[in-house]
Length: 450
Ligand SMILES: Cc1ncc(COP(=O)(O)O)c(C=O)c1O
Image (cartoon, rainbow, N blue to C red; front, side, top):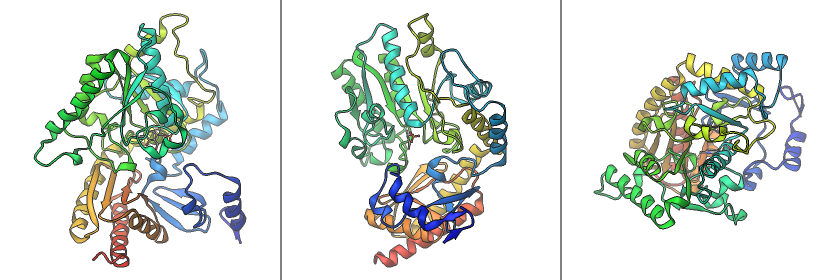
């Protein structure tokens, strides 16, 4: 069959997709149902090769904060392509969009984070953060500080260095031994708090665990503490207990440990603030960004730091930060990112995430009363998750039902993720939740859960 949109044969594309490409984090079970081929996007919707339209409740893997195919971004990219498509940020070379983006990031980033190192992805941003923390200590005469404290159940990168500080077994187990020196502490989830223990007391308990680990290892062996302050879709956006983030900041300050916050997923307005750490008034020494940074248009990541930390790399010949890549800070990616940030600001999308997130929470609370399947609702802003009182299979069944009925839904086992683009309107929230409502009813019948 010829497809007008793609101008080619759909059957042949599907066959070659399977034969010629290994997808990232491929699932053979899903591929066995046939590949999904996308050809067009518009706002919160995407269209597949068969001309079917889907509402994307996962914002194209959490990237498209301002929606698909915005003319403002296309214009910015086209103009940049016509002027200078690329010059590397290499040795002593810069481009104007790169500098303008660094200025913009310095303006929106919390606290004194104002210096950027540009890369190509979130993984690379975290990999760079680890290297930056280590070299920082080397430059200050503390070469023995090579270890990192990380948290169980976290996800930071697909690379071997970032994989070493990732706390989820699935991402690590085939690739060990990984980078030595990774130490793990418990994930900080307020929902795990034992009955009768206050949120603040639970935070203190978790902080004590970190303090004990530091004492055991020796503070002077630890380079950094890396964490996703709001853990991602894999674990349903669990909020930390009250005061936890401030407690971690205080420990790091006291022991000279570099605090790295990975906001690749939680940054760029999705939680109703530009960055999640702003909810707690905490500024890290290094902040890593990706995904929503570019709005999905062209790959880009950033490792941001403070003038204090960056200064050690400007102490004269030999102290330069030893990292880099050909395309990090690609000129056109910077132009796209500036356009994306422009849209977020002009359209008040951070505020929209807060308002639409609150609307979602109210609707989900009402749905929870009607649906025995809903166990818990978690998250903040437009990073939300519904945990089902059922096995993973039911989550997958609901995900497939949504696909059949025109919606892309991400599930991680029995966790359903609701993290749409920040341009979502009230009507679209109702459309998204209306489908979830119907999917839950269908699942309750199908699995005899009523
Ligand atoms: C919290 C977090 N950190 C890092 C990454 C890695 O980013 P990328 O996939 O762009 O390499 C992700 C991706 O899902 C993420 O969610």
